[in-house]
Image 1 (cartoon, helix red, strand yellow):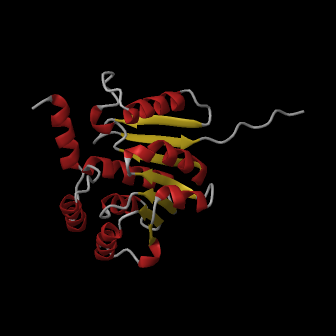
Image 2 (image 1 turned 180 degrees about the vertical axis):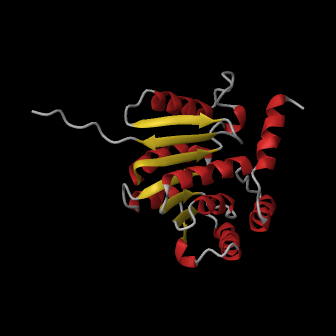
Image 3 (image 1 turned 90 degrees about the vertical axis):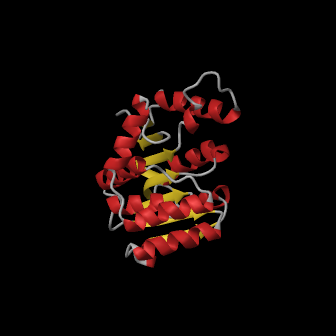
Amino acid sequence: MQTTSLIAKYLDDLASEDEVLTAARDASVELGITPIAPAVGAQLAAVAAATQATAILEVGTGAGVSGLWLLRGAPTATLTSIDTELDHQQHARAAFAKAGIPVTRARLITGKARDVLPRMNESSYDIVLIDADQAGMLEYVEHALALVRVGGSVLVAHALLGGKVADPAQRDDAASDVRALLKELATSDAVQAAVSPVGDGLLQIVRKPEPAAPKP
């Protein structure tokens, strides 16, 4: 087994998941969804705890795996989650109920993110997680940076696209777009960004305050 695989397995094993999370992960597989790795979930929970999040927005509900991890880190937060698949959200809703999360703290919106996000309130969320189709990633990130508050985080799961982003021989539009995004973020004064290789890559973008205007 390669070293990277050993590390990935070790980190996933270290991130303990209870019965509810395990059931949600199993449901994801049955539905044909690729859930975040347990190690990624642990990082989401850590960011939520560090941010002391009270308002979280998620693009891509799935069967509730990422939502459960986020709410584990921020047990008093309210989660708003968008997905096109009502069937997936019904599984997520059941998982949240089994975890004892009140319905008032998990608002599920069925619809296309590109239609819903422009209607959300700007600078209103502590965390915006993007775990959705690769084709819309850049558009979702743009919206997310407007929706997250200063000091909040935009998180992008599966950001390395199965390793394609790191492979210069991969020149399809999705990989090229992500490389361009990462290069732009690295030189931006408006954000602080980093990519963790855990799972399939977790991109974290922290919105920085605007520089103070010079004194007259």
